[in-house]
Each structure stands twice: as C-alpha cells, then as structure tokens.
Amino acid sequence: MQGFCLPTAPNRAKTVNNVVREKWEWTMLALEELLITLAEPSPVQAQIITKALEELGARQVEVHATGEELISQARERRPNLVISAYHLPDMTGSDLVQTLRGSSDLYDLPFILISSETNPERLETIRQAGSLAILPKPFDGPQLAQAMQSVMSFINCATLGAEVDADMALMSVLIVDDSQTSRHHIRQVMEKLGFEHFCEAASAETAIPYLEQEPFKLIITDFHMPGMDGLDFARYVRDSQLQPGTPVLMITSQNEPASQEDLEDAGIAACCEKPFDIEQMRELVRRLLNEY
Image (tube, rainbow, N blue to C red; front, side, top):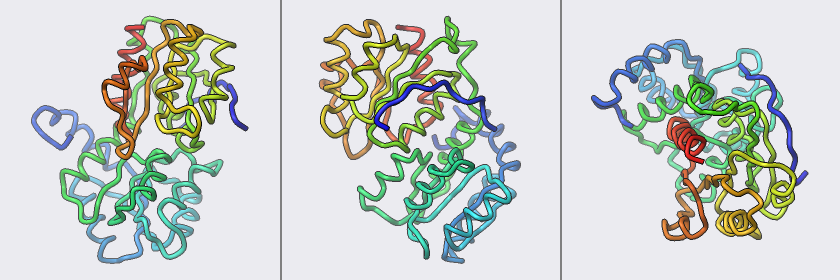
C-alpha cells in the first residue's frame, strides 16, 4: 500500500547540567520504575551497561544473549525499553528493531542501540526505525544520561492540547516517507502529542493526491526519498497553492543534511534530524501550530 488515511487508535499504554537538573531529578525517580530489557551477547559488556544504567537510577534490567530470547521474554513480560547491541548471535540490532516494529504487540517499544558499529548504511536503518538514541562502545556517562532523558521524555510526553488554539482532534497530519518503520515512528510521536487523524504516503508522488482531497494542519516529509525528494515535494506544496498556510516539517538525518539556503528556498517551516528528541519535536510542532 503506497498511501492511506486513518484515524489513530486510542492511546496505548543534554547532558545533565544546572539548567535541566530539576527535570533530571524527576527523571531519575521515574527510571526506578522502568523494566529495561537488554540484548547483549557479551557478559562483560552486559555488566558494563547494566551498571551504568543502575548508576542513573534504573533498578530492573533484564539481560538476554540473543534477539529471539529478548522477543520471547518481552511477550511474557512487556518491558518499557529495549536496548540492544548491533551484532547478536541470531540477528542484527537492525533485524531486532525491525521485528519489533513489524509486530502487533511490541511495535511501540522505545529502542536504543549501543554498538561499536559505524557503517552509516547499517545505522541508518536503526534511525529509520525510530531509535531514540544510538550510542557508541564505549560510551560515557553523559551520553547514556542524555539517551535515557530522551527515553523518559518519550514515555512521559504530554499532549499539546492545552497549548494550541484549536481542537487537535480535528487536525489532519500528512506523513510522507519511503520507510514504513519511519512513518510509523513519526505517527507514534504525533499521537503522543495529541493528533488523531493521519494520512501516510510512501513517496511524494503518492502524497500529491492527498493535497487535493483534504486540508492538513501539518505536513511532515522525509528529505531523501526515491523520485521526488522532500525539498522538491515542499516546493510543489508551496507552488501548487493546494495547502496554503500549511507548514512543512522536514525530517533529515546525519548522513543527508540539507543546507539552510535549500530549506528556505523550498519553503520548509522547520527541520528536525533523526534520531530526534521528542521534546525538541514537541516544541517545533507547538510553535508551528500556533504560528500557522
């Protein structure tokens, strides 16, 4: 299926410094309640990661040597967070997150990759699947702290309903991305912010008919797509005048940066890099809804 519109289902269940210390202390308390499941075949690495998590306040960390073991256990005892190495005995970390995203029961689990893998193409699949953070081996304390802050922000994200002037239940969002897992993650984040109606398209070309069918409050597009890319699509939205006044939010990645000049020329209202922090995305969307 290249594109479709559906209402959402009901809701489902910076480095630490003085500026964010009060918020971080609140997060520390929340970390104690998390069940974290870790896929790491190396006992030494598993011990290092577990200890680092415990130093941040985590109290429940389950370790599994394989991806299948983690998935099986997650179905018996659903975790709040999945952390994985890239190289596992039975699959890769990319395979694991794709399996989670493709399942009917574990698709919405927050995910973090901790790996020595540096291949951009391999890491890009992790980003596309909505990993909240990608950490190196070895990582340092502030890196893990920032990653866990992103996790807690994601889990505890509040809707924007009280901070915008219109009823979000009446707003439609168009999501354009050739990656199904990426579209799913973007939609999941938008659901957390309070949106309830979405149209999804796997290419800019298949998104164009939607522009003619209904008004959107927000358009979110990936940058790099086969055929018409995100910049060309944004230019089409602007020049066609089919959605006058609708802001376009572009999602990019570290491997495919767009220049500020190109963004302005295409009429992009805001840009966010994968993996994005939900608090950053929340503030961008809040601003766009109130300005446009």
